[in-house]
Image (cartoon, rainbow, N blue to C red):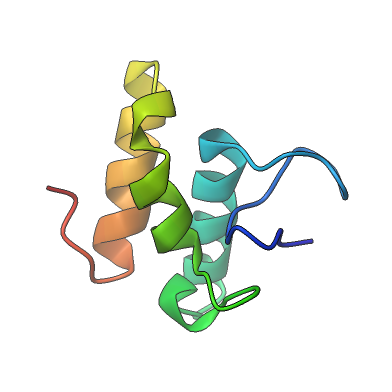
Length: 77
């Protein structure tokens, strides 16, 4: 369940997180869907990650986000 901010949480109704949003994006990409084409309230997961990049804490968070953004055709810079 995608939240209105464009991200996903750990369970339906929970607050979005950069970790779960990155995983959801990778899942969409594996299924052949570009996350830029998936939005809620006009916000995509890429929008969410851009607004919340300060929440990236671990190397794994950063790596997953880079993979998800690049696969969506968005520069990770």
